[in-house]
Length: 258
Length: 272
Image (tube, rainbow over all chains, first blue to last red; front, top):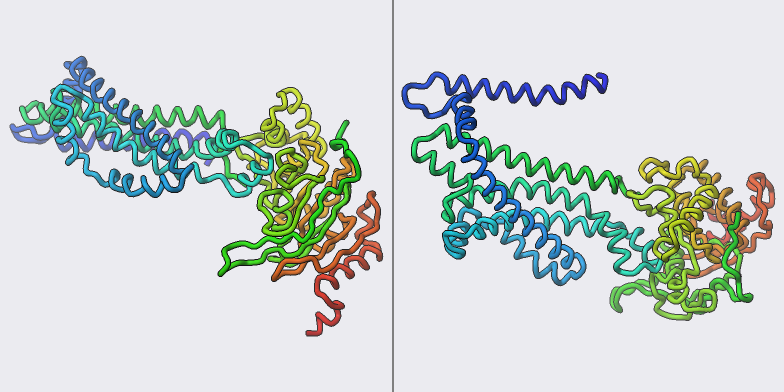
């Protein structure tokens, strides 16, 4: 197969799957009785066109919560992973805490945090997103910081490189791809967690609140329109992370070390 | 082009080891990797350390490089402690693995030592180009390591070890991972490069012909505990042509080293 045809197929195939899914949705939703359980794509589309401001506002709130959470979680994870890689003893201290954080059910933690920071504060939600983002970034960065090979460490020692030089010219560039693996996973997680957190108290805004409210009050189509917005938001977070990774690794290409 | 080494102040030996030993581990499970090594390597001398696996030849080289510290004896590199020599960048080193940074191009890898030591961009770019030319990689100067063959990567590592014009080169089986043909070509290139730079070389290997072809002196080591068992002079001069490999004198030296390694004439070793 020529590369041109392969490229066309690579774009065409996902589109085909999307069209098939849409058709299946339509077939499922078109032949219901009087009670509409599943709105048709057209009904959802109609809501998107009718209430763009409403949906955008809710999306904006969730996006900000997810972004603050992702940033907070990432900074905390990178700093802690750096210290843990530097001092073995810190790694031993932090490892069980990270394992605990990794298994904390967001659903259980959210109401407590929301109560802690009050009904008018978004901080509880942002903290939930931060916790969810922290784990994959910490684990990946810590692993990445340990990937420099003994021969490379010996080389830097033989060159009388300072600790700072070894970090900036060897340890950090080696860890970069691992950081991006963590960030890519964490970006989607942050959106999901922020959204889930909005179901459980806190201010009455954001996608999570909107979906819960409209689903309960019979505005199923509008609820689904918000779900579509949530999917788009998650994709945007994911794609932006991948884009940043592309840009950075193009400047610092990473191949197999030998 | 200038590939001269730093000036030698006097006839200080490149390496002087007296009763050097290295023990790994604690008392109960201590392993004596190297014991009672007396060795003096003159400035500009090419010395091979040869011996079976586990004879401590790599450990000894790591002691010279101050990547490990001896547990007994005294060790001097150009009249200083090994640590002072490392901090003063008196030696260049090449390992069995090239140990290149995969995100850097060939010239950027070669220039790494200069970059770490604060040499200006223009100066290190010029030096890296010279060295890339010296090891025959000018056409690949902007390639990255994963685009190079194993032999090319090793040549980059050798060029990098020469970046600071060291008076001493430490090489730990730098051709160990190469096929025989590439290996012989690299040996020829190394002999040529060393002849041009006049640096002393400590060359760790377990290939007898390689040691004989390259060295002024072959130091034979033996394991458990690692120690020097024989030293063999190889008086073939500095200019060594490929034809040397096929001469009777070469074979005689190879046999001599082999017998020293086995500790007995080879015929008897084969009869066992």
